[in-house]
Amino acid sequence: MIEVKELVKTFGDFRALDGLDIKVPSGAVYGLVGPNGAGKSTVIRHITGILKQDSGEVKVNGEDVYENTEVKAKIAYIPDDVFYYTQASVNDMMKFYRDMYPKFDMERFKSLGKVFGIKTSSAIRKLSRGMQKQVAFWLALSMRPETVVLDEPVDGLDPVMRRQVWNVLLSDVAENGTTVLISSHNLRELEDVCDHVGIMNKGRMMIERNLADLQESLVKVQLALPEGKSVPEGLDILHMSELGHLKTIIVRGSTDDVTGKLAAASPMFIDVLPLTLEEIFVYELGGAGYEVKDISI
Image: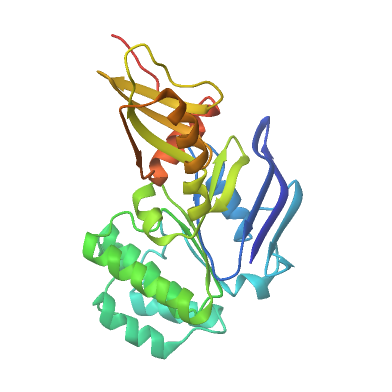
């Protein structure tokens, strides 16, 4: 479990985290999303014990993380830009990880080597960006971590390897109860792997919920109304667009409640459409003043 309570971090006059709260249940796959500058990478550096908070709490499995080597030994962290020693081979970094992390599993390292297919003698700096990411997953998952923290984890990987990495990671979650936190802008991919989602903006948590519950809290409806009829009042509409007689609206609320209120306008046609995580992200942030703007040139 990852628990962040009232976390504050400032850099000079800039307040990067402003009383942030996050709760990631044990064994969950949690997607942390938000616009650029929301503070996602900053909170990740607190969760992994790199930064010390100005105030608030950062705990993993009930223990403070900062300067706690026992806790950090059970956390695998893969940043957006992976770093290795300049002249290191895969085998050199394996030895480094094996010495640093008590639960490093050589049998698993050998087994995963067959999955990634990279020679252990390879100089990592000569590998492509995608292959360096594969090495990062190879080493991290060989640690047998209890918690995995990923920042834009699969950038640079081809579609087949992306699926392979997710399969291995989700198998760890299912078999060992591994807790996973993922920060990514690829919301379509997060939707496939996450069961919990937190949406950040300006250093604070806007929404944190089980993904299924989050998808049920907003409704996307297409409808056509008779001449002279308008959308009934009393709906919490986040977005509305029109194409001829067809209206598309995004409404906060349950499907039954929203369609019940719309029925009062006697629509000629009405259809409830599934909402993607990307749409939820866009329209929730639009309500917070971070919407897509129309620009005329």
